[in-house]
Image (cartoon, rainbow, N blue to C red):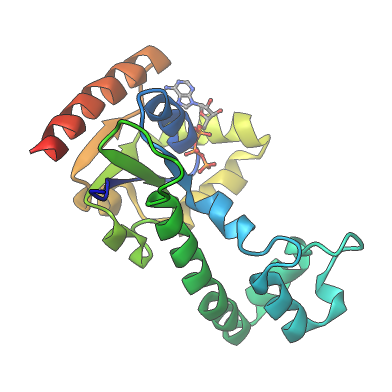
Length: 205
Ligand code: ATP
């Protein structure tokens, strides 16, 4: 079996990663969402959660036995060595699971590429798993407004998150392909269709 090419998709908060990958999914590729994988590696009875339990004790669990994410966030926010410990634990687990999901022989399709969607694609070694990198870009004001509506957050909260992320310029410099999401959903759909054709042709050579 020839292994599939991997297309990475990234962008800042509320730029449209989910919207774009939903459109791609209709055209054939499997989508692996790094955010979902990061949750899967700490589900109930997972090796990830067991290690976190060993490190912090029962206090890090909710009554249901699941991870108390808010408490963990608080710990690592206040202690860089604990943040590092957690990253050292979770990074390889996430990486292995992403690679297995991207190349899962059980989830076959006719498409010659699969997609890795990740908000941290360019900040982590996830970019090295990809043959092509797509960055979704949009005007900052539109980004703020869409994220405010979706998350029911204040402008200030969204701006704070944007300021912590890579700038649009930093992301675009690493892009092989840029999707502009300033326009309508119909325009976005058109771009996705064009890029899909382009990728299929490129990877069939
Ligand atoms: P995050 O990483 O922050 O979860 P995201 O990159 O996955 O966000 P989406 O959730 O896909 O972004 O999009 C953010 C919001 O903007 C959603 O409410 C979505 O419906 C809306 N949106 C995306 N693209 C468009 C568009 N072209 N026109 C109008 N609304 C859009």
